[in-house]
Image (cartoon, rainbow, N blue to C red; front, side, top):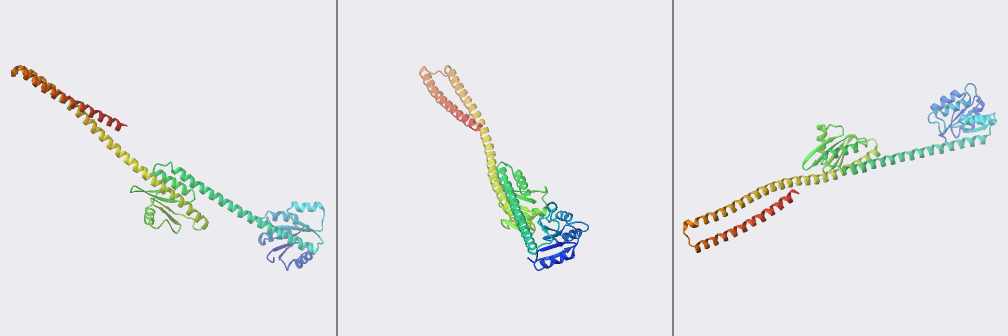
Length: 370
């Protein structure tokens, strides 16, 4: 209790002496004779309670109280007025000036001690409430900040699902992490190719070298204000971590790690997607080449069938024309014609087989065309 400070303001020396004798064993005391002196001491000494006379030369107690209550940090300061004037109007004027209590002169020893103690207890409660309120506000702001960060992380995951290119993912990753108040350089590796991206727009050679050399230093590696996050195909170098704020630093590491891990998962998905698309392109090339070959084969088959039919028809016609020159008997002619008809029949079967083959080729080409 000896640490609590009481400022006694009274233009009468005897009053200051009396109060000093009553309070000196319990509190730190200081004295002022005028309102102006009271304000000056209050600014530098910061008392916990002021015992203020109302009627003094120069600036009176009411005016001094108003000035003191306007000082920074005076919210819990208690002012107790001391006056021989006990009218209700005077008490109301004291309340309006910012006073907390009133003691009539001549004052009673026990009343003075009790009211000072009450004022100090009230100040302790007010200060405690303010601290609790500040702590609660700080916790609320921290919770709001954390909720905001969680929202950013969730939004990153949600938006990343709709991304189909590495450049878009790099931009989203940079946008999300820089929203935490830091700057980054990111590295991506996909299908054997590497890609760098900087939140400042330019990746400096030393920054690129730093990422390359730190990729095998573990999942999270810190040095000075810089921290790298390595998750397989994705690495992020944060160049300005808040190392002076341990709580913020820890939260930031956790949040960035979650975001980078999500980016790594999306890179793997994109890698599968790119591989599938590349395979599809290769298959399309093969299908087009196969279709072109089948078209050429079909045309060749048709031409061969036509040529074969024309050859058989021409042969039969030539044989028939030669009957009169060869001097064959009717029986011989009939036998020869029978043989040629057999050849023609077999040839027609081959032609029909050619048609069936062409139909199958057409079916394959139609399927490839789809």
